[in-house]
Image 1: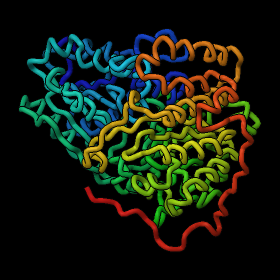
Image 2 (image 1 turned 90 degrees about the vertical axis):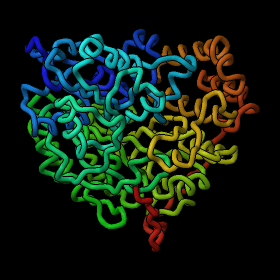
Image 3 (image 1 turned 180 degrees about the horizontal axis):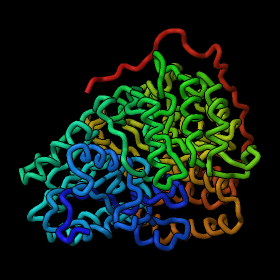
Image 4 (image 1 turned 180 degrees about the vertical axis):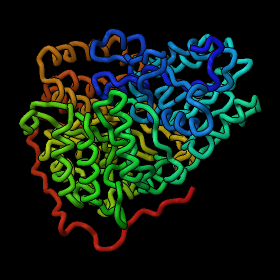
Length: 553
């Protein structure tokens, strides 16, 4: 250890670095759960591992990219990576720059911002507490007069939105991809020069994305950048999808394994855009080779996938069958509903967002390509059937409160939700947030608020969680805890915060008999499930080109 500190220190919070139980789902909950309650939950933890020299064993992949970029200009003796509790080991008189990673620092994105508010408007989630503990660390305050603080990552915009840049003594906030700007900013910081208050990074050339030098949380390995489907609530959807070379991917896998990772997460905005053909055509042989090559690296025991869209599964269902031997066979997830000999199932994050054709056309028509917007319901149902048949149980997000959403839109979403009543999946309802650099943000659309949800929106929210509870937690003791706890929550907290509209939807989560709820709610879960007419994929794909028109940045 150098008692005078190191020139550049990179740091990430425990909650954004933890790979507790190898569950990205559990880590995501840390951005949702109120900090004061999380400590009482036995299956939630932000535990991390520290190397003998005090450095972090693993941190988010984005911080590893920054580390690799800096190691092109600085020696490994000058660049150190750590967690919050070890900052005082690395920051000292010689420290010139501290780079802080911000993935979801305040927990106010689509999938997380809603849940901490269930306990109160100003309740602080775990991520926010951990980030504040990091950014206000005594070592930073003590040495601030001779060092610069740079903050970047996918959630950096949250800090600017909440006007915390000055309060937290941040010298430079980096928003967007940083390959083209990171090194020059840190060099300027080391020289003691003033930095721009905010820098917007742009998509780099593929050859400018460096190999990582050390292990990432969950063994994350990027396989693509960008998307190109044009959803107006997502900035990444405006960037053309590009694939990293297979050898670069495999080199990064070997780096992860060499430092103790036995799980690899293939990270992408859309799995089916890897080495894509013309018009978003899925390259099945390339994907199969990718999965088999990663699985073939000695030391890889488990493989996880991040995000995908559902339309390619319907356009080419063979892709799921081809990937399943590796994706399911090397998954660590197990569920009794799986037909796999070891009860394994593959996971995938899929954005469904709405069941309304009108809203689909307005906000995300490229997500369904090559199908017509009017086919969205059929695409979702057929895609879910194909996934489930091959033991893929996806986590699917829905956005409540999209701009101009009305009761008829919600009824269409509820109808689709009803038709997937017996699917094997997790339905994650989220509230609309106009993220920076998106089309909806530029149009001035406001975020949806829990306190303003309608009866139908509350019903959708709680029906999703009723599905999840029934599928993932079948024990009577768990059900009874909800059956008793939910009514208590409503009468002591919920109705004071959000009013009476949440009452009957919440009681559905508590397993109140449907006969007592059917006059109060739109859906009747006790009614027979209608027969689903799945689309015939060999005739339902339009012959004409319906690719989305992607605005240029």
